[in-house]
Image (tube, rainbow, N blue to C red):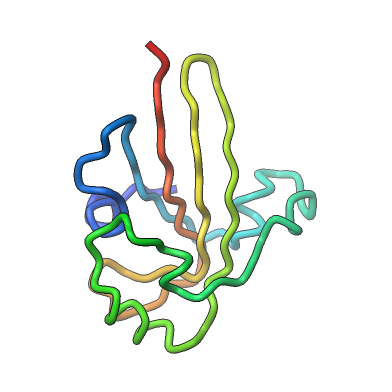
Length: 119
C-alpha cells in the first residue's frame, strides 16, 4: 500500500480538528484489501455508490470533475474500523479510484484512513 499526500490533500479535510488522515492506494481489488488474507469473509460490506456520495464533502476536490470522471459508474465502497492499542482507525475503501488530476480511474483500491490516538 502506497500513501499519497496529493490524494490526502484532495479527499480529506484540510485541517482536521481531531486525529489525522492519510490516503493510500493498492493494486489489490477491494475484496483483497478488505479480507487481508481471509477471502470472501467481508464481501457483503461492499456497496455501490454514486461518486459524490462515496467521496463525501470533506475534501477540496473538484466535484464536477469527479462526476465527469466516473460518468455514472458507481464506486464500490466499504467502511470499517478497528482499535489497536491506543489508536483508533476508521477506513473507507473505494474502487476504482481517481488519480490526483481527476482525469483517470485506476483499478485497485483507495483507502481513506482516519487515525486518532488516545492520550
